[in-house]
Length: 252
Image 1 (tube, rainbow, N blue to C red):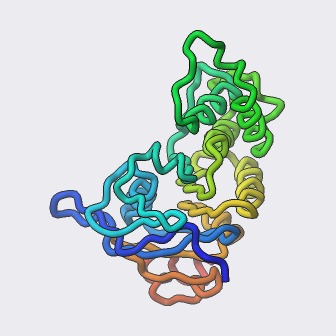
Image 2 (image 1 turned 135 degrees about the vertical axis):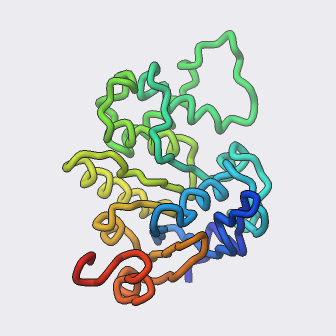
């Protein structure tokens, strides 16, 4: 049995009297994509923010490769192998695609660089950046300004920036958001390829993509986990159909 690389136990987040995430426990394994689905306001993005360090938990444990990281800053978690993408494209528009990935790769370095030396002269960093662009199919666009890339390409670049930090776990928050009719097919293929070498936790509203990609589905409602299981088990779950998916005839 594959040991989970990311273990979450009893995770909770309160905003005053509002409980946004309530006693969530789950495991994420390399090669087994877990998708989090649920209605708006279910707590999905709050959960991702807790795992990445963008929010501090009110209670609970987050173990990354056996190490407790619940109180670590985002950059510390990134250096331990946790990468993420955001709902909104989070790139540097005035810089080229390669420079975006170079900055991400540079963040892994434990020591400051020599500010008198050309940043593009660090061959190891550049190699990581180019490898990340190749992984998402943007090698031919490496010299293009990020602002000139199409929306789908910008989302690919966001994932490439995460890959440049050499993560073992990828947290993907709605990577298909805002895409046109053809673009989701490329993103689904990319995520499927990445899943072979990475543990992936995916939040996504595109149910066609979710059911094509996920080996395990977790359904959240009102901050709590309603059900977890294989796609077939979730399709057949009467509680899930009632709370989120609708009837099997209408939705699936």
